[in-house]
Structure formats: structure tokens, C-alpha cells
Length: 266
Image (cartoon, rainbow, N blue to C red):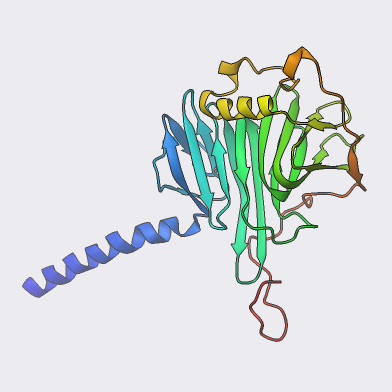
């Protein structure tokens, strides 16, 4: 009898240790910072679940930050997304295989302001880290940027590297390239355009990461302009039109290793 009880206790301990690891095995990122009220919609479905530091994030999850709240998620490829107050983002898809040099990440930014840092550039000419908004699709060919949602428009600030964006409006199919110190705006019904950032813009973005967009009065589709005037548009850098995101996502499995048995990065 004692032996049976001991066996039952050991079985329960094994289940307690193993089941959480199995449940969390699909996590592609973890919360590294949570301030205030932040919740998660698992697979985009209610009820919302409050989150804490080290909670996992899986493909299909939707993250929401409330008023005066912030969150940061670090993904398995060491990239990170920091969300300002009153922001909303979904992890639509995320597959990463470092040894094979493979990544496919698709995030959907619905509301507010996010700060993205992508530490690894695997295919510079073919972005495989994508951020989608209501008006545009952004491909990461740089490593750091801010993405702001305002009514009927999305604004991408390139802090470092090169980013590319494409309007969802089929009348404007070309790709817009942004370099360090530039920003591009993607209106819903107009041609995208680009301008240079200013120190005042960057300070405002940093402030909004703490206060949110609404508390700064930044609700119009025109970025902050020093001296009350719009800065002149820069000559856009266009690339031929091509889809940034394929129409249908492939199965969430990395490709087989290259022939010859090599497992190094492609």
C-alpha cells in the first residue's frame, strides 16, 4: 500500500513538472516587461488573461495594453517589441530556426505605438520579419523603428538601418524605402510619402512610449513639426511593386536543411 501511494505521489509530481512545459512549448516569445494593466487574448479569443513577466506568447495571441500601461515581448530570435499605453498587437505567425538561418514573423499592429528592435537580419533583400497595419505592410530591412497608428494612416519612423513599406491601397503598389533618420506616412487613400525626422519628433515618440498617444494630443494624421510648419517631402525611394507578405502563409515548419548535410545558416 505504501509503495502504491509513493508511486502515485511521484506520478503527480512528474505531471506537475511536465504539463506546464508541454503547454508552453509553443511559446515564441516572453514578456520581459509589464507595467500596469496588460492582457492577452489567447488565439484572439475572449476571455482576456492578465499577463506578468515571463508569461509566454504564442502565434495567434493578441496583446493589449491599457491606459498608463506598457509591455515588452522578447521573441525567440532576440527581437523585441515594446508597446506604449493603449496599444494592441497580434502575433499572427512566428517561425524561427537559427541554425538553418530561417525566420518568418508576421505581426499585426492594430492600435497605438510600438517600438521594434530586430537584432538579426537573415535575408536583407527579402524581409522575413513583417509588421502589418490597417493601411500598410512593413518589412524589416533595418533593426530599429517606431510604428504609429493614427486615424486612417500609419507612420513608420526608421531609427536605424533600412525599412520598407507598401500601401495596402492597390493604386499605390510600389515599395517605399526608408533609411536612418527618415519617416514614411502611409495614408489610406493617398500616395505614401517620406520626410526627415527631427530631434523633437524623436523626443515626442519617447514620451508617447510612456504616456500613450492620446495623452499627448497626437491624434491627427500629421507628424510633429518643429516651428508649426510641415517639413518638405523627400524624394521617395521606390522599388518595383512586389508583395511583402505572400497571399497565403505556408505551414509553420522550417524548410529542410540544404543538401550535403550542412546545418549552417543559409
